[in-house]
Length: 131
Image (cartoon, rainbow, N blue to C red; front, side, top):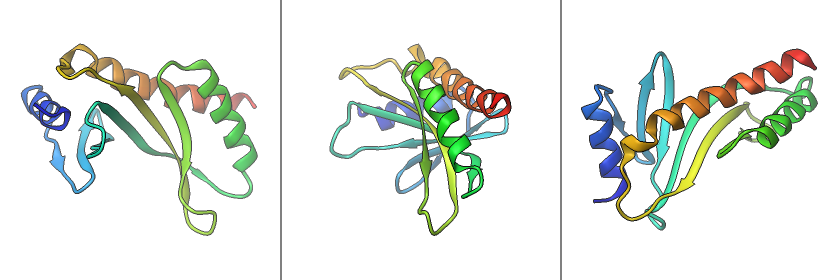
């Protein structure tokens, strides 16, 4: 069974209400939106994101980049990056990215993935405040 299907089944069994989108899945956990991006060319690639955690503008860009760099250096499996064009709205996203085997048990890592995304967000916020 494809990772997408396994994740969809897992989320439904856990009581989440995932919504299918053209890119993958959207679901909420404790008020936060999470996005799963399906990769049609690499079914073993698992990418779960916590989008739009902080708005980026010209005035705060250096502090944002510094906080992201610190968070990226300190966190396992999680990376933060800016989404958006310099001309448009830009914001920080947190991503959990791993490669899975052909028969993954989504339940073995899903809670940890969500926890790591939340921890990455908090680490970023802490670094911004302490700068």
